[in-house]
Image (cartoon, rainbow, N blue to C red; front, side, top):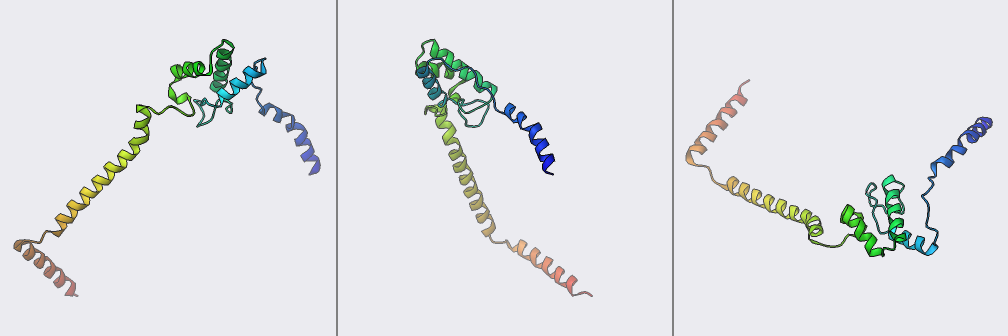
Length: 158
């Protein structure tokens, strides 16, 4: 058993090195690279769920990291790089998007739906209560009594 484990380890251990992805080229200037990394932490990977492009291994995140580095080398400020990506991909590319009218709709729409649902439920329950509370007419009372009597007679029969 020990021998089998050793053989499997020798075969599969080198393959684990392939699981670690090699990241793209970094900037030669450490200050610019640090600036790029900080900016990448503020940008969302459009493929992953709520993950920055700095953390993501998706191909699109790699492309976005390349664009960020490219724009920084070109002399763009952090705000200019953000604006470039927002123009291209929309506010969704920012991990902390600005609060604007569209965002307010996204945040308030669920609350509005809850209010509409609660109002509808209250109206329906009040209508049912009113309809259920209405007394029977004399004719309805006679019909009900006849049905109950017929049911009682059928129950008494052997």
